Image (tube, rainbow, N blue to C red; front, top):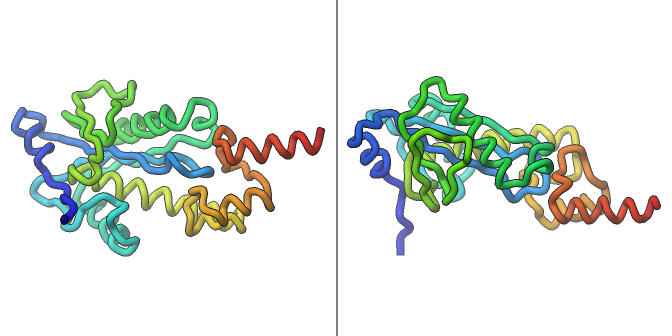
Length: 212
């Protein structure tokens, strides 16, 4: 059974309603133990849609990189983040919504309609919108946003890995891989770790008990 590929049908329906500027919105980085959560908002030009757009998870790293350039050349793009501190202060869901809100606010033109990946509309997004479960595999605009957000966040984690070697962030992007968990035990918690996430919290708690 072949996987369905995203199309432009959600966007076409909105355009038919008179909502000519449609932005796809997606975030990446809910699961990692370290680093920010990153969101992107992308308004595609219906007459110049890059070929090969798909859910970022379904694409090779090389294909994503090629599409990064194509999307930036052909579309209106905004990228935003919520910090580790914001993740710990609120929670990862709210922080991901904050990143989405910032990404939409950062667009150089205001969209008429938003296509939001998932099943919840961030409370700060008051524009016309609809949520689409598994939207990154169904809507080309959300696919484009997923690719942009993932590449941007991966690059951030590669950069952080230079400053905090040993955790493997250049390959695991902060996700809780076996090697990352082992490094947490052996090297301790960095300022970029999410203290509200259980594996990180548990290590801090162990260290506190030892020092007490």
